[in-house]
Amino acid sequence: MQDMVKLIHQLSYRHSTNKVFADFVEMSAITLSNATDKTQYEPREKRYLEIVKHYKPEELHEFPKLLGMLVNHLEEVPQDVLGEVFHALELHNERKGQFFTPFPICRMMAKMIVGDSQQNIINQYGFITVSEPACGTGAMIIAAAKELKDNGINYQQTIHVTAVDLDATCVHAAYVQFSLLHIPAVVVHGNSLSLEEFSYWYTPAHTLGFWDQKLKRKASSLTLNEMISNRTTDELEKESISDLNAALSSVTEKTPSPGIQLRLF
Image (tube, rainbow, N blue to C red; front, side, top):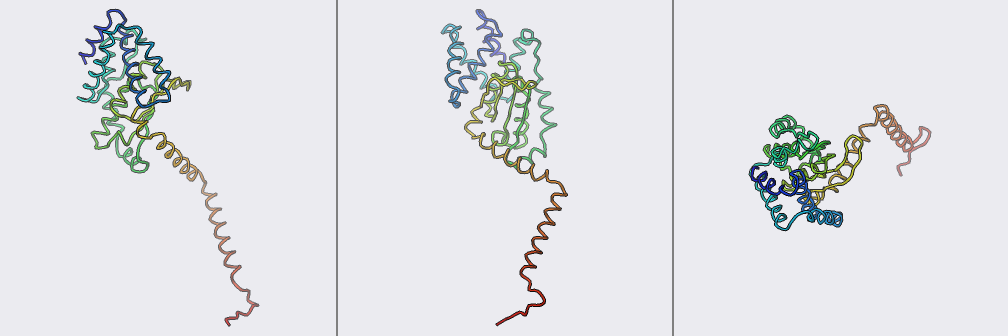
């Protein structure tokens, strides 16, 4: 990651390091989003053009190099590369003391969480859903995806993530890394406490994998199961008695009374 840190420092002679990092992840996020999410293309393209106005042409040529470096690092070892770069640039001192959970700790937590219960859910519904209310740059989700892969589970087909963060730069960073790792996800710029939501970022894996439809089917299935499970024992007993009475009534109607002579011919 030192190659990324070095290049960002080189681009910071006219701009703050914080701005260069934030602009890099936002431009990368917009580029990836606009490739598949056409519903938000226009406003995001407009925002992209606003960002590039602040840089000289020779500076802009360096941003694709940064993205290429990020791709290479994620291919070598899937991990929270942008979180590491964030701390290496000491941006946590500028951004109100933000500290991200170290990736080794995220890996340990993922090992504790991922197990047979997740496999059982996958067997039943085809996938599991994961919610991260304060995702940062996405370390916990990346660790969970890596743990699933290490356990022989294709996370690109069997996991869907909803990740939220109040910091727009974190949202963009998480979105970029999830997109490059092909993690089906919706990254929300919002406040998990007040439930305010400002924007939605759908990864290419989410869009190309038709995850909207998959999630709707699972929600419908869970609703039906909940309705069935919420029926009380008394209700079930009443239904059983009612069914029995109806069956007896049907038999009684078809059974001749003792005073009637059966005629076979």
